[in-house]
Image (cartoon, rainbow, N blue to C red):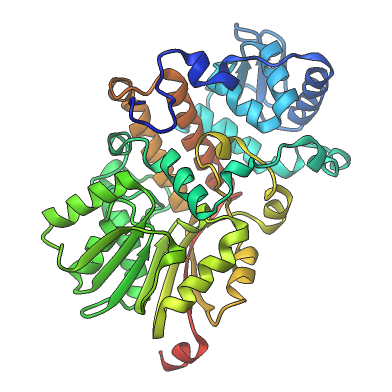
Length: 438
């Protein structure tokens, strides 16, 4: 990572940059318990687990020769990490190369899935059943709580956003399509899409949301979460007046540059501003995959701000990643590997949780499009581009541990959507009287 990166991950010594990855915690009883629980869990899963650095050395699991393979190269380190830090340790052990995913010994004809995604999809499909119910009831005593520093206060939100979105515009450009859209695309087909299909699918997603929110000539539109400016540009090209806000300094600079290059500076205003500080009235308010960075405690404030700023007869479009409500309830107070390393302060809601947050406003959900399989396809294409850009990423200053971290993040997310553990929705919200007039 570059020396200007606020996270400091790019320092020369890995031990300074990644202390919890380089340091292996002590083993002891926790490691013994982790080994026993892990072995018990995988005996019910269609995978093969190999302990050791050679194929077939100490194999267990319910999988056959055609199933995904997890090779644990350093078992002592792996079980020490998992025993001390659970799923955070599982992720850190991948960053440290303690384990790897391998293709099946006898892959089925035509099987083209990435080995890591295949393996993680099995885990994601069985996630709620990996730990015995008696131990799940003790979850709150075994998992870590989120650090107070990750709280999404106005200052905390700026820091959390910077730690992900201000890493480097060049980083994101290595794997995003030319629109620089960092959210689920909407494909014509659920599987088999190519890189050449991605840009059109991203524009299809944007256009659908703008259509649903009735954005056209003369519309006053607020966008919460600018990204790199493609949605704002698309709305401006329809004749709308756009006010877009972001907390990412790097995105702000590039989005403004792209707007100027497109000749839309008179129609688009982009500001570094918190959603809590927005004023004015807008005919349409759109927000794409930003609600996940708000945090449960602040969802009411977020929807209150949207309600306050929506003009009579207006529409709100929110694209959000979701998880099942029972998993949301079980994990909402847990500090996860994703939160520690990728999205500090982030929390994926459930549909029920969002409906409850909206319930305190005058708004109601009037339409809902679910398209989770399309996100799996989007992530697959991103991951393939990211992995192919290894030399470019190294030249940008992103070390091996960072690249393994992001490979796991993209593969883990893809697996979540393939297992239907995760979903993505486009919600449209209106006031009941506006719905009656539509």
